[in-house]
Length: 165
Image (cartoon, rainbow, N blue to C red):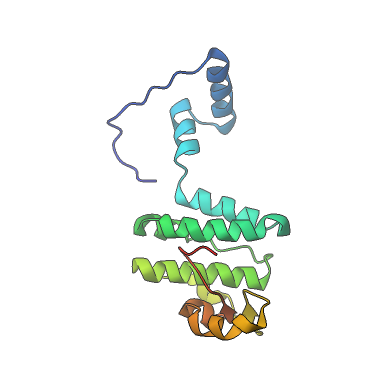
């Protein structure tokens, strides 16, 4: 989030119970009410990245979190992207997931013309090819149309950052 002078004011109407709940939550977070509300409404890029990475620890939420991460990367400005991608994925994530994340970040950085974070180079490509579809008839299409960062990692996908299946 940009750190600029605060020249505006926002007022919202809340009940006494809602105000007390917000005050209590802000106190628990060690923040004043304004900072707490801003952090909830406009979370900084690294916090959002970490939240998505955390959701990838669970196999149950991993696919959705990967899709959300892809969409989110596409919406970031260059400065937001630079901040967001400094966090490397946990070593405990499967190699396939770490490679997907690295490829998405590499592609997003190339599109924004910013430097790729060093952690992406530390993730070894998959030994065996991984195809996004089990349909054998799609393999030639995936081999030909996967973006370069995915192909370098032995991942073959039809769509990537910004695309939806």
